[in-house]
Image 1: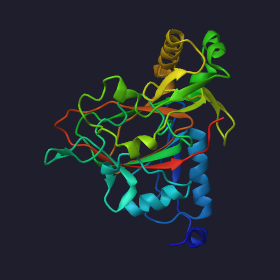
Image 2: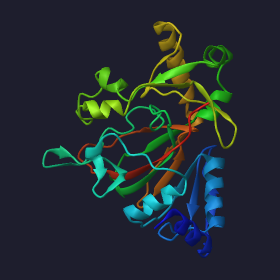
Image 3: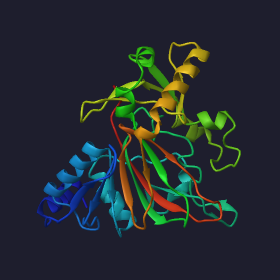
Length: 298
């Protein structure tokens, strides 16, 4: 359906009755009573958008949606990004990345080590992600939690010596950083072709970015993709980043999401970094992720 028709359809949709309930702590809210299999009208969409900006993360409970419905809803927020690992994209729906530890016929069906280190999705792109939507398909009976750290709060509470060290600086982000340092031993991430490598050229972004919608500053570095601070000696850069990472992920900055069946979590990659805690290898886990393109950090 053309975008204009989608917008017209959304505007005419019947309003739904739902609640936005803040979670404990400073990050996250759950949205209860909203059915994402139905097109949201403009008023309901505005409430969801506001909740996402206010809380940085929203959990849509008890959703039963198709891949196309996940894609359509995600597109309400912007252009969708296609992951470089094409072999892990959902058949006939390349906008969806399969995040899974399941192996079939000796081959992984999805990205098995997604979220192994703290990161903001696609920070290694010139236009990093605005946000990601992760929809539970199959959950393990134990483990599998996801942690989210508030990078606004991390910046606002950063010790003065670190503030002085990073403010006004840029840092380099690289998709292949963990390939190079030996952390791909389990071979969850296939060797990239020259064509794929051309899609993930290193980029430099501000260490401290300004959120384009709420105007707040946030740290924008992570242990997964950030390699170094531009113009700072290597040893000094490594030490500064290590201190920043440790501060950013202190317990008071972190929300732990314990997945429930049919959860879809939508988080703001401009405000948060996240980490997958993992689960026992014999327990199956599968989720579907869409990723929305943002703007150039400043």
